[in-house]
Image: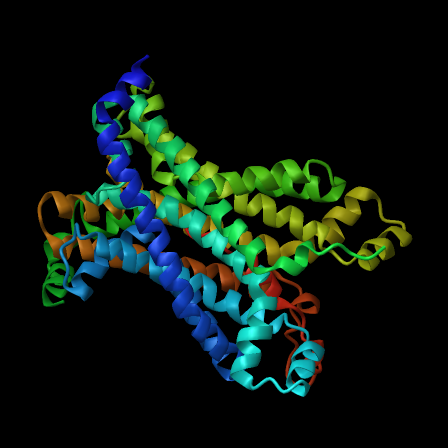
Length: 217
Length: 253
């Protein structure tokens, strides 16, 4: 019954960490998507920018998270424990992952579809918003799922330098050599990742009603 | 910035058992051992699964669910589980559980990329090999393995990056390596020391990525990568789908 007792005694604290953890996982994905959409569009529209943009994002993606958590405060002029560092670091990773995904997603739109849209009188911006982006949603969503799930795991790493989130359960468990908080932390991180993944899947279904259309026999 | 240069140019930080070269070497050793063991497990298993087509759904599910597991939680779980039962010199008690976790992290990207690579081999190439009278083993080793190398190598890249990153966090559980600079620097409130450690880890990751990419250029057949010497360049629209291969290399530690 040590599990229930631990949860009972520390429930308030754990819920607060869960709350922070959720924010730190979600906000960077939203910001990252907002930044990647125009960048990915540029990489697709001006082909010569594709290689440098994708190389640069690949390079950013190789930097281990703990290194970024430590380097960013110096660059941003923030305290090392400021959760904003974690948010910025994860936004960078999300952008690094999604720029290529958005560009490839837009490239996956069949040419005859864009031509048909143009012939119907869609202007370039209209066509992007009403035709190309919706068709690219499944590809972009697949990238978003990877981003959101790995973010949950990356946020936990920041606990080693003291940022308050679910990873604190691991550092506490290590200091006490006590399994209960560690296992609770793992279960909660996995559960959070699964829930956020499901949210992305649900949003994708909402945005792509045609994929559920019944095919005529 | 000046403080970081001061730290890097102070000779005291380059000597002794806690000097930068020793930490770097420790980091490379931990990572190389884990990646090699991971490769020794994942490559044959991936080839087998890809060749026979058995167990693919199981492996795909396993690899995906491992992405959701927090690496730091896994690391600490194994340390608390195993460390009290290991009696040895120095940091063996922390080294063994850390290496187990590092191997656990190295296996999925190599495994899933290997079997996907084997399964993505052009069926015509496989049929041709069978038609030439190759046995199953020959088809696997002489056709399927060489053809799947681009994907295998990108799996190796993500595995190496994941391991290098997690080896840094292993310093939190009292292990050596470059992470020591980060966590000791924090304990001593020496921000330049922390940043030095972080910069070195980032540099190590980038250099490793570059080296594996170079190795990939050397060992992947030119017939697959489409890099011919000047004058024999393929027509533009024939350029092979190297991009699709890279897209599989996602998995940030």
